Amino acid sequence: MSEDTAAMGKPTLSPFNIVAGAILLVGGILTILRFTQGLDAVTNLSDYNPWGIWIGFDLLVGVALAAGGFVTSAAVYIFGMKQYHAAVRPAILTGFLGYALVVLALHYDVGRPWRLPYPFIMQRGTTSLLFEVAACVALYLTVLFIEFSPAALEWLGLKRARNLVVKLTMLLTIFGVVLSTLHQSSLGALFLIAPSKLHPLWYTPYLPIYFFVTAVIAGLSMVIFESTLSHRYFAHKMDAAHLAEKDTVPLGFGKAASFVLAGYFIIKVIGISTGNTWHYLATGYGLWYLVELLGFVALPSFLFAVGVRDKNVTLIRWTAAWSVLGIVVNRFNICLVAFNWHLPASERYFPHWMEIGISVFIVTLGIVVYRFIVTRMPVLYEHPDYDAH
Image (cartoon, rainbow, N blue to C red; front, top):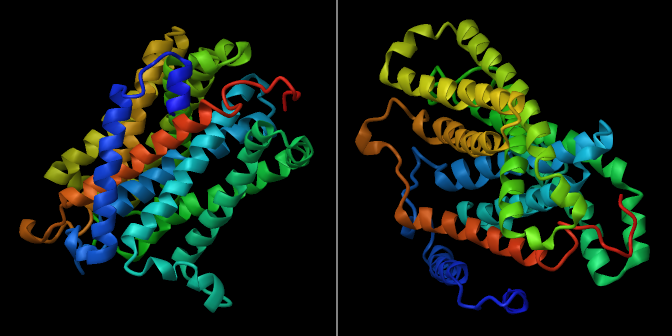
């Protein structure tokens, strides 16, 4: 990072570096406390609330927002939308870092993190849904690593290895889509075992479908959001092809997001109808459910459509950020707000400030690593020694 800032004539002690350094320092201290003093020292988790913000945000939100990798690669390599080719590597990198940070966050949440590999080693078979999620995430993280490796291999000058991996692009893309479909939906299926704990408005047999569809929405919106930030802060690293897609990606992905959000709105209404939970809409939880449904599903669908119709890229970018926030709200509602809704307020979970601090630490770590990679490796430009792929 210091080499990059020096090369651009910027001071090493920039505001970003100072703030990020402070967060990483505090996060390092909290990490030491977590792994030396245990969960009780840094969390408000309990037997009633074993899943807190580390699951609700770091895992459920993290996995959803990392879906841009499989969405973009499928669009380009399977559906032949070559006009979005320049968005593939940034999306794959974001997806890879997202899943890597999800695995890192799990080490904080699990009481004995060193036993995470045990199901793969000690058990020859299992019917556990959580095991299926873990297996798919582990496999997909490996797929993302291989998919991104050409950029690192080009940076290292390993042309033969790079060419070998590029030949596997279609196979890796198909495998990635299959794995993503499995674990994105299975994360929603995890909550099907808790019908008495999750509020009836959010509990529905359609939860696996909801989670997969919202992951696609998150992927589309996150690609637009990430593209916006990259064009603002890393435009000096981009070649002509990437600069030319400044408006192409938001318009194309915004159009797709509008359709998917509209479809999601319809199946959400169907879910209420099949569950006959209309009467809950008149309660306090019902009003909040309507805020999520109308404010974070119907509204962004409409705004995306208007933005695409008017070719208003600025509106699409702001809507993408709002849609990303909507995914956060949805996952928090299911995992935290509407979970254990029968418990009195005194027994409800609210995260400890150290839990929030560690989550901020993990997100900051991801941003720093992303910044380090894109300023060094051919992510936002085509390496001049290799043909575009």
